[in-house]
Each structure stands twice: as C-alpha cells, then as structure tokens.
Image (cartoon, rainbow, N blue to C red):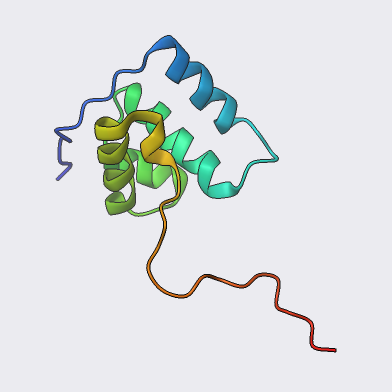
Length: 95
C-alpha cells in the first residue's frame, strides 16, 4: 500500500532551473543527477514508491532525499562529511 509523504515539495523557479540543470548533465557525478531527478519527480506529485521504481532504487532512499530537500532545500542534496577514515581513490601506486 503506497504511503503518502508528509514532505510536500514545491519548487521555486530558481530551484526548478537548478535541478533541471543537474538532472540533464552528463558530467556530474551520478548521485547528484539521481537526487535532482528524485526531487523533480516529487515536485510533480509522484509518491516515493513510484519514484523509487522509476529510478531503480529503494523507497527509503527517496524518502531520505525528499525529507532533506524539504528541510534544507538545495543545500540538503550535497554530500556531508562522513565519520571515519576518508576514502583513497584511486589506489595509491606503490613504486
């Protein structure tokens, strides 16, 4: 049974423009493109289950990003500092 999100997304013109730009860029990291698409779909009134199915992800992931955007707007879609040792990529060459 689909659940209705309490986080209704309504975009300003500037937010809509920026999210559309991110959603159509091939040079951005994949996670940024997907997050932008999630919010654009949410703004069109789609529920989390439908968005998750279209983007081949979990409903909980869509719910998390919808909530963060609702509370923090565009800034909420940015990566946050994570605890622990930073990733090392690409692997260091030993020579």
